[in-house]
Image 1 (tube, rainbow, N blue to C red):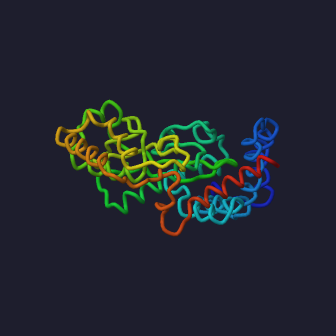
Image 2: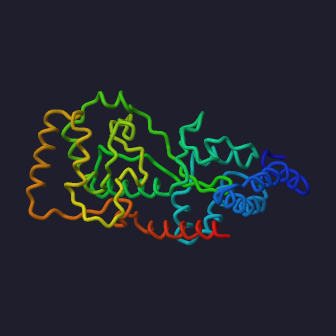
Image 3: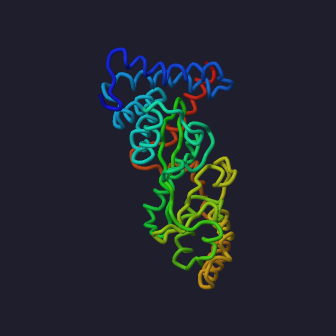
Length: 306
């Protein structure tokens, strides 16, 4: 019998030991709405997983997509396209399908590096993956080759949706700050910042990756400022955030940046911009991320009210 092959009463023994009893504990100790939602949705996922003759990675991911159908059609399409795969899927699968107790860095809202892997748990906020997808569209449409964004995927762990990120190898913080930003990089950063409104520029959020690119790793909403999406902001409002990197620029890049700011400030009319969390113009082709967010909010709100 294979590691994940079950039949007859054996499957019931496995589920009672590995799923039903832990779930009962979760229900008894569910002290907040998130825990109660997790307990209820885990019932459904357990049943979907148990219907397969062989519990393997493909069937495990299929059960995740089926669980997304409870949220809505747009969210389901979102999970189909951007659901966990590769190493992230393997990490979650082996802890869930194998019946092991999930480590806190996977199951809980705690965010951080998952040991012995190249995966980070980035928590429950959909904003992190939605913004990352839009940032990648900005890079693609403007043919930027020196700026990048960490890859992020959506996964489902014991009743709660989680965003996972692939580890980016390279230089960060003090080590990154030692490398000067040349003119070519500054030109691309200006385009990237003016199109996204990204404002949280510091060396804890950006990495000089091993391919020589400046890669952004923090993509939550608040990294784009506290705007609610209705304020009239301009390119000048956005690009001034690059001042944080000013002392890390080469003299040539500093001169270019100063001239750009000066010329932009002299324009009679500067085009009004929308920060990326509220800008559906950069949604990937074939998917409406605003609908994804709306369905998820409606679903979670309804679950809390039950």
